[in-house]
Length: 438
Image (cartoon, helix red, strand yellow):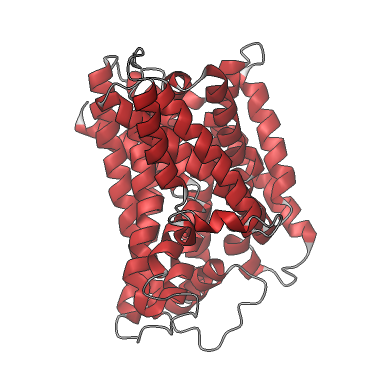
């Protein structure tokens, strides 16, 4: 795979990942974490960069990506999990969030009545017309995003970040929020990385990456694997650098007693930084950054979700799915940003452990041929504990016994069950046929 192709696909992947949550969560995390910023941002980068990187690479284990490799657990599980993931990071949560973030950061600063519903409706209609146009022909997405929109996004981001770093470099670190301690900062950062949705978005984007690499004439599994690793690694480096920079700005920005109000904290901080460093032009610069970041992500998601549903329901044309998912996203986006984020948290808290368990199992069984039960048992255990944990943490049911599970306080209670389930399944079915990927 040529270097220019690595950059084209890597830039496309970076731009699709770098959307709404990638902009707003690091500054808010930096502002609240104060002296424990390093621990918090390490946790955030692990879930916001490390897991997506692993997720994209794991897709190349099978030539047909997750749709085929997850059948090693069970064919029904493959369909159910992927449908849940595509709908969650697609029209139900992530795509609407790109529109509401773009609106709050790119339009609200210019409005006299920011609480009015009419400007949001008008903006989202125009926004999703553009997304529809970008998604209509998926084969041109690499050229449109990778070669044109991503360089523009990186240039505008660097303009804002470099100027703000120079302005705030001598500022003291902001006070640490009460929720952050030396023991909790990493966990908070780790779980906030969930909210970017990138680890499960990687499962959706991976097929688009594989198809893009195949479009270059690469067909062997080995070449697909190395091409995916190179492209995904480039995207990961860019993401990590920008996350850390945005988070650092959050630790140093002096809001001067400005009231956040009902706005998302990260959104407010970025808007403040742009205005503080560039004045009136700052709102324009930030608006360009936000629109580029959110539109590239939304277009990538619409294409990925539509292609997947077209693959399982081939009688319905791809472009019909583009219309359906664009309209659903348009409707949900008009709930507002905070509503979209709050609604997504319980769903993501269930899906993330299941999706990550599946990815890790695919990687383990690729290097260590394992019986099917060693994949099925941990998946079943993680599904059960993830649902129970969400019910208990949100006080929808009193399930206090679950607090005795190892790592429950860190929200990693699913990891020991993943390990125990794999080992138990391997021992029980040791004599059975091992899983192989094609």
